Amino acid sequence: MGQELHYNGERVHNLTEAQAIDLLTKRDAEWQLKIDTLKAENLELLKNSDSLSIMWEAKYHDEVEEARVDKLTLIAKSARIEALEAQNDANIKLMELSKKPKPKWYQNSYLWLLSGLMIGNLVSSN
Image (cartoon, rainbow, N blue to C red; front, side, top):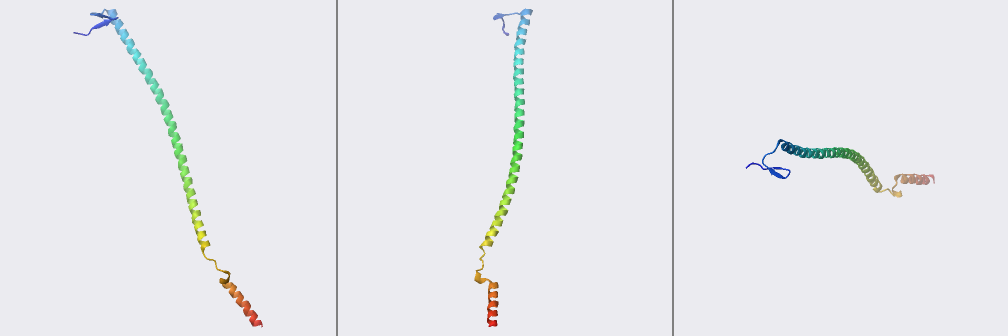
């Protein structure tokens, strides 16, 4: 009721020392092949992870540089907006000044004073 033993495709009840050593050697060779395969796969994974970490590091530096450029762009745009707002305020003041009614020529008090003096001078000299 134990485990059946097979050697070279035949069922055997007892193994000789040479057969046992041969089975153990084959088993060890299978396990060594599996270990070597796993090592190779792990090595490939490590290489991939190294290249991925290099790629992610480069992407991180690119993102940091892009963020720095974006920050400088925002600062420049903010300064431009402030300058445009100041120019807009000046334009509004200039427009308000230009909307003030200008006096007509006959509303000029200096003109009336001068004409009055000239008429008075003419009248008094006659």
